[in-house]
Length: 110
Length: 114
Image (cartoon, rainbow over all chains, first blue to last red; front, side, top):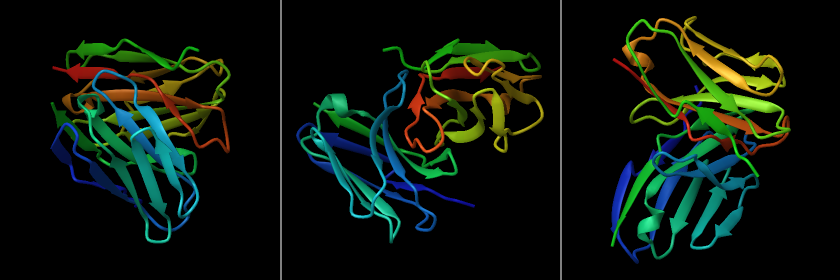
């Protein structure tokens, strides 16, 4: 059974704080790892698709790293803003379908 | 351009009723996926189409769940004789096709079975 785990489950931070979350996934038969940002009542928004060991990707204040040999990825948010409040999901690509973690729910207080 | 759309956005059904959930993928996307997200869980794979062919339905939880995509575009997920445990958000995603890792999601349909 392929298992994707995310931690922490939830996080409350003050505006301006930097934060990071972890996603762990199977290290064998790796093709791609996805990060999505999901706000309530909206579509999950793709942040990053990561395919290569050692990949580092950045989008504004958000960045992600990937270690396929040990099976983990980190997502970092620098200087959190209230609009960053959302659930952050990681997903392991396996034979066309995505296997998701349970997500990290981030709340940023002004 | 238009993204993936789903309807209805919210559905309340009484236990035992049949429901039909619709997904309009991005135009030209060959692959279409359905996922189910129960409260407190991550989305879980239900089924996958490539054009009109249903290639994988291993995630459908019971024979009360049925999906179709007859013309290779719009898809419908049907749940017969709904049960309380069917209450969840049903997400649809589409992608360009085999070899494309990116999946684009709709906003989901929140189904509540009372």
